[in-house]
Length: 385
Image 1 (cartoon, rainbow, N blue to C red):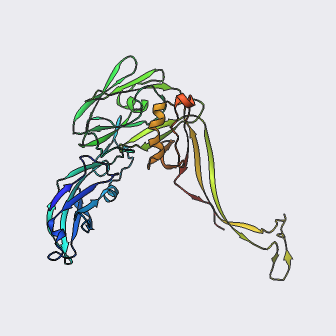
Image 2 (cartoon, helix red, strand yellow):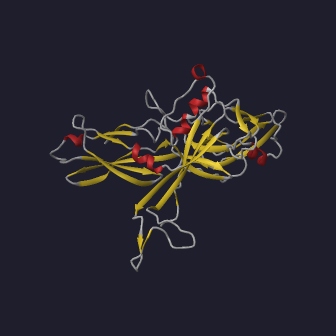
Image 3 (cartoon, rainbow, N blue to C red):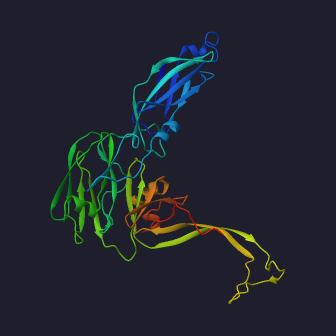
């Protein structure tokens, strides 16, 4: 049995994960009748799935695409538990999956022993978008974001502002924060190799790690990261006249990022009702007909009644002016499958209802804002009648 093709190193679990195998037995229908290739998927040392494939009619190869199966075993959640700036490590089972493929043969209705065991391959929970060939995840220690890293505007009182940083080894390292005058050094240690470190770069998080580093009069905050020397900087702004909403979302690289909508908001409620029809009169046990209750204050009998009502909340949010680079990056927010809205220290899972996203450019549209409509996942029921 020969493994002829396999996914490139560090492929995306959200793409095609193609394996092609070949054995000469597949062409011998006399000795090996009703021949099939049998593939087992092992993830993190556990067999999770078995698939069978008939030999290709012209090449006799066994062709398997395991992408749709493997991606079901990656489940990432936003679950900040660590203090200060580093709040969550996203590793095996969420950010990446170690996969081994084993091949057996079936003929005459009997499955034989394992005849080929592939080496362990690591696949990552990211997506590529439009590609011109098979691509792989870069294992360089770096920020995993497509957002611009300079001249961002962040309100001073934002409590959480996330950005993911990939670190391939368990290591201790320093992050330096510059407040326009002095530099504070924040020291941390990773506990998981090949992990995304979810970093909280909000003023509140930095001040928890180094009290007094950021104040309301700090004009600019600069953060430099180890290994690659990447830098991130933002300008502090006041909260403004509107309530600020932090939106945390799963980005294309498998980590969480934050964007603040700090301009106008519009709240609405979608309502579903079920009605039943009645006659406009009632007849009591004595045969008396009435169109209203005989009480101190006449209340007309209901002719159309609501017996069931439920509703769900929607919220339309608007951003400040954003750049061309931010417009491109925020496509990841609109297409993200996992989005949370932060309100009064509670993270609510929400859905963005827009199904179309136009990337605007300054040369065509001048300064632009982004507006999105979010729908809360909860549906509320009123009293039943």
